[in-house]
Length: 257
Image 1 (tube, helix red, strand yellow):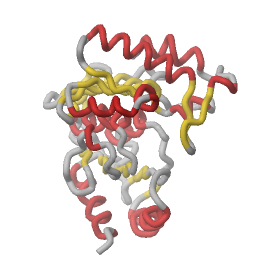
Image 2 (spheres, one colour):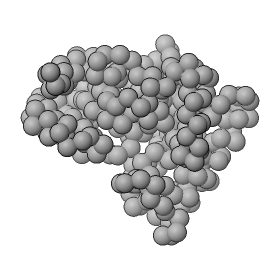
Image 3 (cartoon, helix red, strand yellow):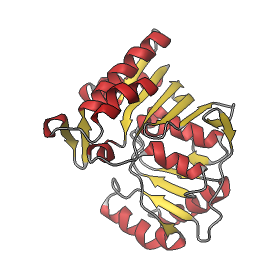
């Protein structure tokens, strides 16, 4: 991950030509750095664990059938998380890698390209930053601090969240980067987040890491996040189980009859 950052990502930071940035969806871009990073990560992971499928974000865009591998043992790679930030020459952005088996993330790593912060977790073994075990801590603020992504919600859901959820929290901007948002939930900067889109490269590593830190990440129903259920919308992350429960209860009250 460090090599991908140093060789494929940072040389392009604030150094992208117009031809090196492509729009791949509404409000979503991809750059040459995304592709170069994924190529390096794919090469390295294939050497590290031959025979394990690799589900990379850019490879899956080119061939959606790759997503079928999420049902078995696989690596899950986000080669450049926060690409929109990166393309506009601003932080945060990072790399996420997870190792999953039968829909469940078993290990996860999050690398911040600019600071070098390295988060790691293995199922049942706790969460670490730069080799030191950490425990998630709420901000302690009242009302709690919420960073809620409205980008992929439909208009009705967006209005409901804005009207009925937001008044219970101090709302702050989202970083548009899961590699930054999840650490904020553990490090006393944010208390809760709602994610509408739940693609595996955004959440597999980071959700495992926050859960191992003692926070909570789960579907609004309370079911665990599974990487092979990425088509299902909606995910709540919180710095503590109590804060998760409070937000989940409020969201449940908004559900249509």
